[in-house]
Image 1: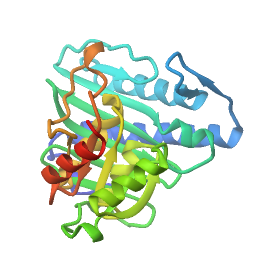
Image 2: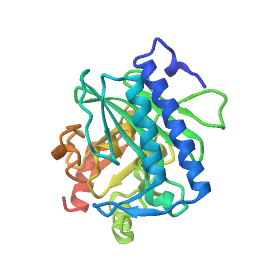
Image 3: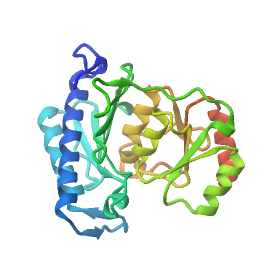
Image 4: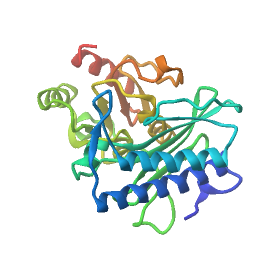
Length: 281
C-alpha cells in the first residue's frame, strides 16, 4: 500500500517504508505464534515475555541493522544499546501490550521509532490483530493503513473542547477507583481502556478519544513511536507537569520520570495541571 506519506520524496521515505514492512512482518510472526500456542515467562522486572516478543524482536533487529547499518538500535527485550555511527537510533518495542496478548485480548502492537540526535522523527505502530498500521514522520503527517480503506488515510485528532464530549482512555491496569476519580475530576466521557501505549494513542488519532492519562512512568520504547504519530496528527503529549518527553538513551534515562498526559491539544496545559492534582504528583 502506498500513499502521500510514503512518496519517495517525503522526509524519511525509505525509513518509513522499511519500518512499515518490518512491523508488518513482526506482526505476522506474532499472530502465527498466537495461533500455534505459547508459554509466558516473567522477566527480572516481573513483566511478561513470550517467544512472540523474542521472535518479533529478532526480526526487527536483523531487518533494521541490515537496512541501516550505521544507525543505533535499542529494544525492550534486550535493553542493550547498539551504538550509532550516524547520530540516529531505532527504538523498538516488538510487542507492546504483552499482558493483553497473553490473555487473548486486543490491545497489543508492534512499535518502531527513530530518534535523530535526541529528537523523535519517525513512528510506526502496527496492531496485527486488526491489520491496522499507523505511520508518521516529522513533517509528513500521520497516516492510517487498514483493510477498511483502499489507500492510506490522513490522521488528525479531533477539535473537541467541551469536556463532557471528550472521552478519556487509560490503561486497563489502572485502579478502577482511581480511573473513576479521574473521569469525574476532569469532567470527561469514558472511552474505555487498552494495554498498549500505541493502541491508546490510536484511539486519539482515530478520534475515538481525546485524552489519555498514564498514571505511572513508562519506558521510552513504549512512548516513542506513538508520540511521533500523535504529534504529526496534531495532538500533544507531555509529562503531567507539562515537560516534554525526553529521549535520553542512557540506562538512567530510559524510563520517563512520572505520569504523562496525551490529548488532542485543545486544553492540554489545563488538563496536565488537573491530572497532577488528581494523581497527587
